[in-house]
Picture (cartoon, rainbow, N blue to C red):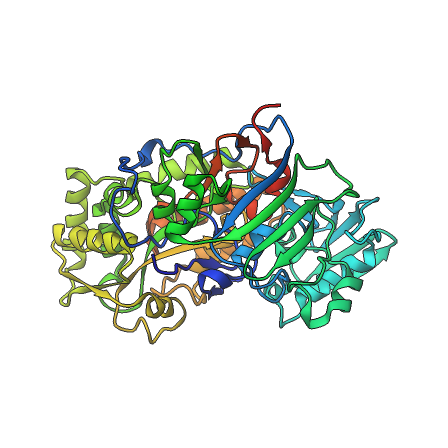
Length: 562
């Protein structure tokens, strides 16, 4: 299986391409079920049939653990590059470090956000955030966590050379305003900043330890600089990394005393889990998840994620007319793509951001999603195809074939063929351009690389549990608005939503923005991509949602039996 990549639409609408082992900071879905797909058979190696995408149940957590465990062996697909997420935001490093380092806010398994090291938060006005820090917290070297450490950490994150710097673009000032108080002032109200503080922009470092290690901070042989439920007990480069429960932790002690991480990919990872050599993993690919379905001794859990599969039109050729984009959306067999390309482990979806983004007002977002299902049917019927053909007739079929950009990985190949078939069904000629995976990645970041394609078979995720972290991609001046969508009302409502602190008021704006984006088919959503947790049957407690990238998942892990 070739290396896969994810996309992170950062909240300033700048997406940065990263290889699988160097995903952008505040990464949300790298260890979630990857949207890129893998080469291989349509059916899992076990012979099991594909999952039923329509009935795939997404749950944020696994059942609560009842007993302690001395040690758990966990698998990553890569060895971490570094445990300094300011300088190298790798997926593997994040899966480890979320158990070691704490943030000012915490992303919960249900994708809501709550204060953590900032025990209290207040907004004396719309452009000011006052954080009161939790008392009694110590770093793993025993020293107390102070407001000076917090302020230093925030300024380190905000440094232009650091991964999280773009989260601070709207910050006017950050100051220590009391022994346990930090005040942050903004240029304009910022509804998503506290969500950034639940990500890597909110990690609080031990200033003394970071400065002592210098450029070597985050590498083997150096201690961590954090306050979480686990401390770094050892890292043997090329072999393993060990965490141990921190005796001085201010919160509840973890049930699992020690977690040992090793790394393997593809068949080696599958075999380790099948044979019991490892106890669990967050699966990064459909092939991995499919090959481990129905294996005796293992359970799979599927959780909410922000990740989606999408068709991303460009400013060239056949799909610049929104009527043709809507026609393609109406005629696309999403259920077939989910089954043949992804083993039923993705779900046909009507919007370009997954349900893991619903970190507030979840029922409102769920209802709004259902209202849009008619624009993106799972399996088009005769009425859908008739409407699609009517739209093509109104717009006029393109004179040149629509060029579909993809690589040769199975999921994308299946999706590209489904797009071609859908277009042909409604009288539009199409052809597929297949490039190597490394070259495919350039489509996202280089306009010249995609200069001769009309639509990209892509994948995307956002770094925060708020759909507004995605919809700025549709702004008229966004670098990710490839098709040139322009709507002054849309732009106005996006900016208004990003400046609206009240969740109830913001959800109304977000739903309206979502409707405008979807009706214009700026992007054409295909499926949402759940997180997949594979776990030894004797263990439980870990979150199943993509929150595990920011939440101390190992601290909740334990034995099923007391």
